[in-house]
Length: 256
Image (cartoon, rainbow, N blue to C red; front, top):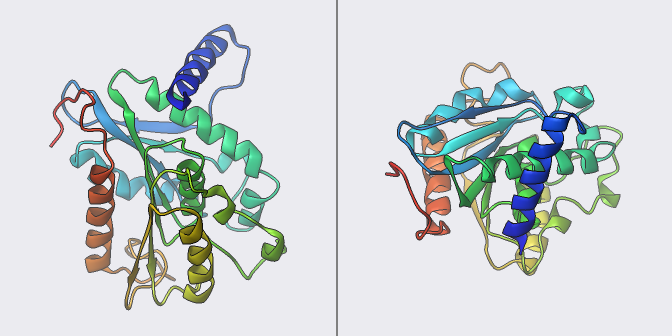
């Protein structure tokens, strides 16, 4: 039923765009593996630093045989590091709808296996990966050093049920990866959130990297420390997680 609804959404959206009845979807870029397809796909969700922070991670998923849709869910709302908390409050419902549109577009792409659309989110994007898995928009998702709770800004996280509230007993699989030394999303708060999710969903998996901080994949950053070993393992662990839940009966192109 969900796949029929998403297909209808994508078809309806395409017709409306053609007639100029709705605004263009949020800015996004598409990246394709070599070959005819169709291929599995990944929705790559950026950090609070904006769209540029995910660019260096895209090619590795393409090399692994995925179509990558990379949406920019900040620019339309003039969001950035200074007002990122509004992502989870003022603009939360708007971004939910915009990401639904991106998923629908991916599932309507003739080079994409509709049954095998996944999502991976980094920091801020991890919050939205939880949304996409929790609401069954994608087959499975992964959150890398994702936002689960915050102790800064004006936003009152004590009154914020999300992202944990997105996950229920019927939600799709979610993998959460985090660094033990993350000082942006502290492990104590993260583990508290994870306990709630694990009670709700048996297909929620977690892994903690000893000695890793926040944004372990950011090379040359003045604040975050790059960790090559964790960067490599987190990617491989995510791809393996997606493959575990992949619909193997879907028609495939040059999938490796």
